[in-house]
Length: 605
Image 1: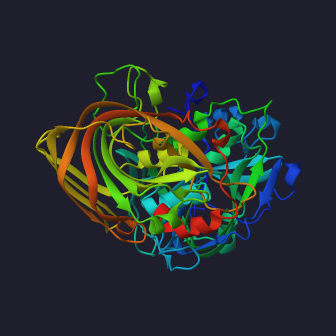
Image 2: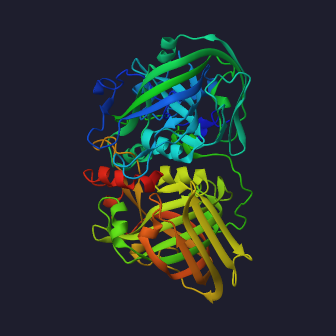
Image 3: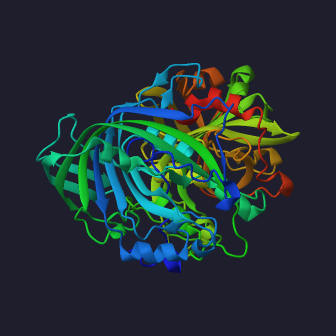
């Protein structure tokens, strides 16, 4: 398993907490309030307009305690598994050897995680969902807490809010859970992800009433979860002196508590290692709860150690957060040098007139619209090896091949007089592609349903059809025909002689909890392509959606000015035309909260 070989470079990572009732948060222990005594500073993020308390009502939860495996204990001694910023023996988080793992699987029928428009002004939106989490017990200089080391949810919106807002490493899964509020005696709970049956719970049996107050004590420790990917990486680039974490404190009101028995079975894959985390799947304790949760979130930060960093590799902090099983048989057969990570992409692109006044409010602070034309382009990668940029992980084989569709909505912008292209929105149909883009670059990605066809196969005289929708909303429909007329490389797709074609990312789209401790940073990249075919597209018809989360009809006007087809490979490198001092610079703290609240539907909904 990956746990067993993690010391050699694989992972059991700092996969933080969960949101809501999976026990994610815990009651007040004031962890970190004493600041330097434990190497932690705390902040509450007041004045940013982000609600600090999230309430969940009538949560139905199966709560289990399981013994921690030897593999987890050995990995924890090396450091890295809990995302700590220093060696466990020199002030970092340590696994609480006297504790047990908490496993919680729950249904949240009342989870107002979303907003119909601007945060705090529009109507909160309910996002019912299920959540599975594994929480490991931690101790740091005598203070106890928990951290979620694995989490799965069955709603993509909830997944993004948990990850970007609360440090929860939620990944997408299928979860079958009893819908009735009555104890599901004899029923089965199933959790699966990307072809792996992660967990099956059978033969649930009620064995008696549990004490309500004792059940509330299950939430009595704070939860300290990972911060944002940017905050954890910035010290490596010398751009920050502290690493941030999310601190969750929960007030639990248990309304029903029953002692139960259950039979657990589990399978595992390359990256779904639920089973390997425990020495036994026989629960030490099992409870069925109906509970209300009020969760207060704040930031805490720690100074990383230069002289005593964790021994385990950085992958221990990241792999479990975003990887999953390979579900495509597509591979790169004709490997060329240099090896590019994104292979055999069928691309269609359209240049469109933009409505500057409508686009400007959605641009991050400091950016200005710098042109009259935006670019819509869509690609199907076959495959994309997102964890093997430039073949650095393996120059001869794919390591994490993904096959997916992806729509880019990019705008011409300027920052300090320098021109860039800014992806204001990206929609795709693979969750690994989504979370890796979020975590590693700051891509503003959301999952969508995408239908992309050629009739016949891509090439001269082929008819193209593209339809994109998200959560039942129409986003985009494109029809057109590829001609035999060849085209030159196109600015913003595969022509980069103009520095304005470099991409500006915002790393990342985290919640503005505490502006003194954690701000998004600008990241500048340039793409490199290997083009195999490039042709004109004619008779192009575009229908744009106008919903608040995807307002393409407001951003663009009319039909495409020009359009075309490209078949290409692609990879990414730092922008060499951007001054190094600008890389990872923080955005304006005063303007960030207002922009984030305004852009919330576009970023997450």
